[in-house]
Length: 267
Ligand SMILES: Cc1cc2nc3c(=O)[nH]c(=O)nc-3n(C[C@H](O)[C@H](O)[C@H](O)COP(=O)(O)OP(=O)(O)OC[C@H]3O[C@@H](n4cnc5c(N)ncnc54)[C@H](O)[C@@H]3O)c2cc1C
Image (cartoon, rainbow, N blue to C red; front, side, top):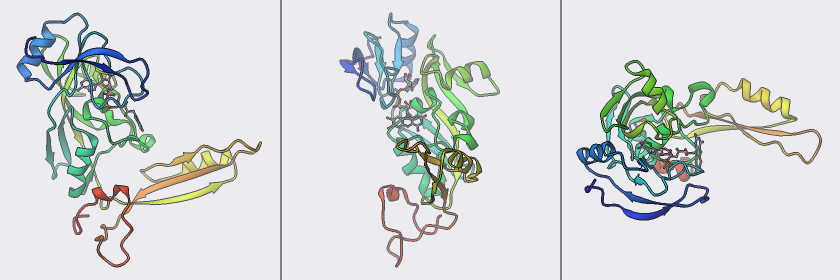
């Protein structure tokens, strides 16, 4: 336990409600981490990602909180379209690493400032959830230190009980160290977005059902100023054409996401 040299810190979630104090530190070496967990400190040891959960899920009052749990580390297999990322690697880092290779994370929540560990612990979803499911559907393997301090490799086939308890388990089955996920192939980092104004809620719901795109559909909430609700459907599809070099005449104006554009010719 002596290897844990944390500091007493006040933590909250993204909602900044119910702050609580904990001993916060990390990362620490694997042997020391296993020893710490196996020593069963009275309030346990909780993994924390980027603290983007809205409530107090990543807090452990008067206990230990590992933040970060690991160092940031990635192993990308472009041919197999898979990525092994350590738990504390952020989505920002992963996207920057994979998009230039024509690959993308299969599930993109509404923020990129979260970690792989936090994403798996919360089984996050993106706008493509109806078609592609949550991140659980894309995981090949989870490396975990369980509550006894044992290092385990969980797969959906090898140990379904522990695997499915960990995905969406909010850190209660142990500390996630690394995750291997399958990636999607893309030809462009840009989206083509179709925007449709619709007469009422029925039309909006029908439009969302009809949308064949892998991405969104996203619906703006209808405004309730009048008895007949109106809707606004936004349907996005990844461009199938390679990205136009930004210096070329007629190239799209750079937007916030353009930092992730693949170099020309790789799209
Ligand atoms: C602006 C915004 C938009 C969002 N949009 C979406 C969305 O579209 N879809 C969606 O599903 N969610 C969304 N979320 C919620 C967010 O994706 C989840 O709360 C996610 O869990 C945050 O990840 P994190 O790395 O910040 O984890 P934290 O908030 O730090 O932790 C979340 C949980 O994971 C556990 N955990 C973290 N790391 C580990 C680890 N290494 N081992 C074991 N357990 C661990 C923690 O103990 C905690 O229980 C959004 C949040 C924000 C702030």
